Length: 230
Image (tube, rainbow, N blue to C red; front, side, top):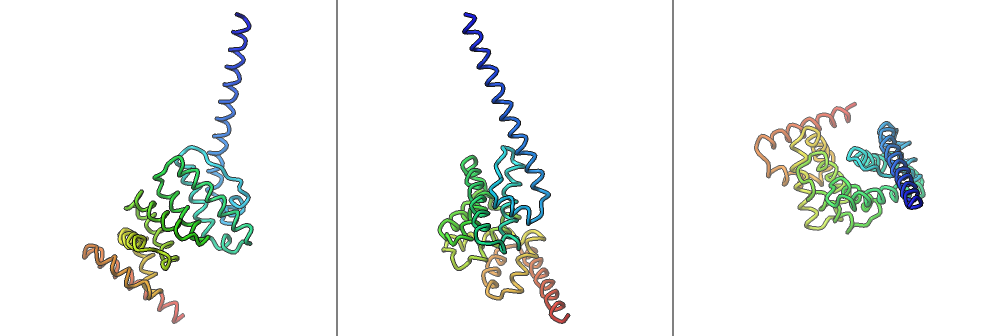
C-alpha cells in the first residue's frame, strides 16, 4: 500500500515538473515573439535562416512569426543574401507556415506565406494553390488582399484562369482602402501592362470607389512627373 502511494506521488511530481517545463518553454516562445517584433530586417533574416524560430500557441505569436517571414523574404537583405542563407530562410518559413496550417487549415496568412515561398522557388502549382486558399479563407481583408495582389503581379504569367480571377477580386478589395488604392495606383501608373486588368477590377466597383481610384492614379502620376523633372 505504501509503495503504491509512493509511486503515485512520484508520478504526480513528474507530471507536475513536465507541465512546469512545458509552461516555461511556452513563456520563452511568447517572449521571443516580442523580441522578434523589434528586430531589424537583417536580424530577422539571420534568425530565420539559422532556423532558430519555433511556434508558441497564441494568435499574437503566430501572426508575429508569419510577419517576420513576409518581411524577411521580401526585404533587400533577404534578397541579397547568399543562396545558402536564402534557402535556409525559405525552409524555415515553409516549415513554420506548414505547422500553422496543420493546426489551423483555414489560416489565410499562413497560406499566403506558403504561396510566397512557393513563388520564390518557382513551384507554380503550389503558389497558385496557396493564393487561392488564402483568398477563400479571407476574401475581404484589405491588407491580405494587398499582399496577394503584389505576389500575383510578381508572378502574373504563372497564374491560371482561376488564379487570375482571384487576382481581380483581390484588386477590387485592395483599392477600397487608402493604402490599397495608393499601391494599385502606383502599379497602374508605372507598369502599363497592368492597366487592363486593374481597370477591369475597378470597373466592378461603385462610382465613388472608381473616382477615388482615379484620383489616386492622378496623384501617383504627378509624383512620377515631379521625380522625373527633378
